[in-house]
Image 1: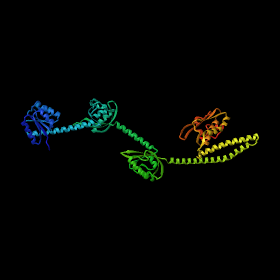
Image 2 (image 1 turned 135 degrees about the vertical axis):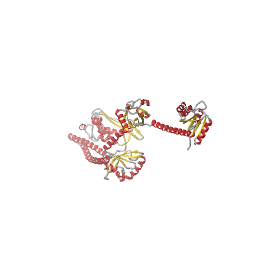
Image 3 (image 1 turned 90 degrees about the horizontal axis):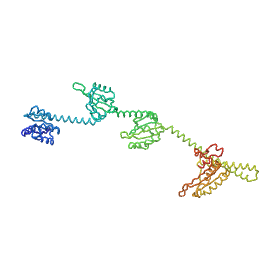
Image 4 (image 1 turned 180 degrees about the vertical axis):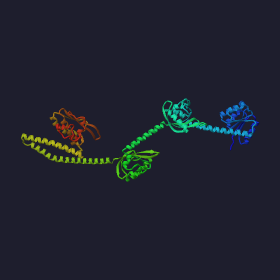
Amino acid sequence: MKKSGILIVEDEIIIAKDIAAILEQYGYSVAGIVASGEEALGKAEDLHPDLILMDIKLQGEMDGIRTSKEIRQRFNIPVVFLTAYAEENTLRNIKTSGAYGYILKPFNENELRGTIEVAIHKHGMERKIEASEEKYRTLTENISLGIYRTTPGPSGKFVEVNPALIEILGYKDKDDLFSMKVSDMYLKPGDRQRLNRKLHKYGSVKNEELVLKKKNGDQILVAVTAVAVRNETGKVIYFDGVLEDITETKHMQAALHDSEEKFKAMNAAAQDAIIMMDDRGRVSFWNKAAEIMFGYNKREIIGKNLHTLLVPAYYHAAQKEGFRHFRKTGKGNAVGKTVELVALNKDGNEFNVELSLSGCQIKGKWNAIGIVRNISFRKMAENDLLEAIEMTEAANKAKSEFLANMSHEIRTPMNGIIGMTELALNTDLTPLQEEYLTTVKDSAGSLMRIINDILDFSKTEAGKFELENIDFNLRESLSHSMNALAFRSHEKGLELICHIHPNVPDTLIGDPGRLRQIIINLVGNALKFTSRGEIVVEIKMNSIRQNNAKLSFSVTDTGIGIPEDKQQLIFDSFAQADGSSTRQYGGTGLGLAISS
C-alpha cells in the first residue's frame, strides 16, 4: 500500500534529514524539506502533500503557528507540530492553529509514526464527513420536498429548514421562518398536537396529511413524514421531517375522480355500444349497451378477438388487410368516418349497424374506439319508405299515362263537335238557334283548352314532354300570339303592349309553339286578373355568347297582384293564390305549372 507524501518544515537541516530518513524507513514519501513558513506555503500550493510536519520556530517572518493557520485555511492540509517547548501558551497556540497534534522533541520513532497515522486518519475521516455533509446539503437545497428540524412542545420552533420548505410556506428566508412558532403554521391547532402525540408515542409518522397556512394566509394541503430525535436519556429533543405540498396533486386526483365518475355515468347511460379494441385486435372495453346489442357480457368478450366474434365471415379478408394497415398508421377506410355495416350478435344473426370509428395511441400502439348504433329498425323504415315512394311514383305515372290517353281520346270527338258547330253556324239559322250553337262552340272551346292543359301537364309528369328545335322568327311568332290575345284585351278595355329590345336577335332556333303557349298562358293570366290599366310583355337579351343567346321574357300588369308568401305556390299544379278566385276568375290552376 502506498504511504502518504509528507512535507517537512524545519529550520535545522540535520534534524530535518533525520526525520526524512525515519519516514522513508516506514514507507512514507518525503515531498520536500523547507526551512521557512513562506517556503512551506509555496510547497503546499504546488505539491499539496498529505501531511506537513512543522517546527514552530522557523526562518523568515512567519512562524509555524501562523503558517499552520494559513495552510489549513487555504489548502486544508493536516499539520503536526514538532516542538521542544511544552509551556501552556505554546500548547494553546497549537490548538488554535488548527493543527492535528504535536510531538515534543526529542521523540522516538514509534511516537512519530503513531502521531502521523492518527493525523492522516483523522483528516481522512473529516474529509468524508465534509463530503457527506456537502452531498446532504446539495440534496436538501435542490430537492423539491421541504426538509426541516423543529423543537418539540407547544412553543416549538424551526431550527433547520431547506430552501424548498421556505418556498412552500411562502416565507422570505430562514430568519423570516425561524421567527415563527411551528404551531402558527397549522390551520387547526389540534393537528399539531395530534402529530406530536404520534411522534412521542410511535417515534415516527408517514404521509400524515395536514392543512397548513402560508405566510400570506393561503391554505395548502401537505403530506408529512417525520421522526422524533431523542437524546441519550430518551428525551425527545427534535422533530426531523420531510414535507410535500400535495395541494395540486389532490386537486388533480379530485378532478380525475370526477372525470371518471362522469365517464362511468355517461357510459352506463349510453344507448349506443362503446367498444375499444387493442393493437392485437382484442376487445379491451365493452359497455352495457354493447352487452345488450351483441348479447356478450364483459367476461365473455374482454380479451377475445373482436373481428372473429362480431364481423361476418365475408368481411374477414378485407378486415385483415385493413387492420394490418391501421396497426402501423392509425388510419383506414372507416377511421374518422361514420359508415353503415353488417354485424353479428352472439346468436350468429346479422343486423345493420352504424359505426363511428376513431384511432388513439396508448403506450405508442394504435387502439381503435368504435361507437356502434343498431339501425335495423331504421333500415326497415327506409325500405318501407322506398317501397311506398316507388308505389307512389308508379301510381302517378299510371295516372299521368291514363290522363294523357284519356285527354287524347276526349280531344278527338271534341274536335268533331267544334268543327260541326262551326259548319252549322255558317248555315241559315234563326237567332235563337245561332245563340244556342254559339254557346256550344264557346263551351267546347273552353273544354278543349282544359283538355290541352291536362294533356300537356300529364306529359310533363310522365317525362314525355318534348321540345322542338327548329328555326323561327321571334318577332313574327310573338306578333301572332299577341294578335290572338288582342280581342280579349280590347273587350276588357286594357292596353296590351309588347316591347322587344332592339338588340334581341330576330332569327332563333327553338320551339316556337311552346314559347307561344307560355306567352299565352302568362298574358292570359294577366288578362284574367286585371280589370283596368295595362299589360306589358317585355323581351330583352341578358347575354350572348357565340351562337347562344340568353333572353328574358317578363309579363307585368296592373292587376290584383300576388302576395309574397303565395308567389311560389302559384307554380304548383292545380293551385291558385286564393282558392276563392277559382269561382270568380275560373281556370284549372295548370297554366303556370306547365309554363314553369
